[in-house]
Image 1 (cartoon, helix red, strand yellow):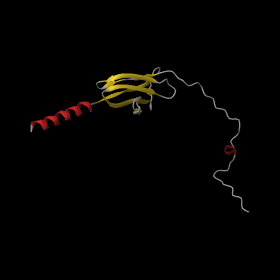
Image 2: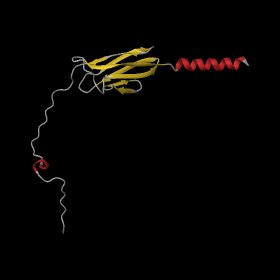
Image 3: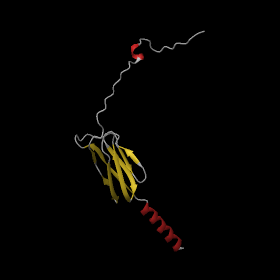
Image 4: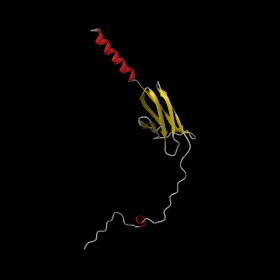
Length: 128
């Protein structure tokens, strides 16, 4: 009678040990101004699981114990990749730098007929 109970206890302990999850959290900010980057993407490369930073630049992810590789990206900034062994709750603050985009100039040479017309919401239907 003691043997089945012992087996069940061992199985439950093994499941609990492997199911332990830890959190990774922190802030994503601009390296020059220190301004929070809203909507920065934080992605685990192995599983493509990720999240976007909130209105304060804060993010939080949860994974089981493993080697984690995170990629942090934001439009106009260089991507940052970090690898580490997740053994406990971890705080990692990212500071992204360097604009990868050059200045973009948009020119138009043709006049827009809608802006030159005073007619709004009209449709012409030919009647025979």
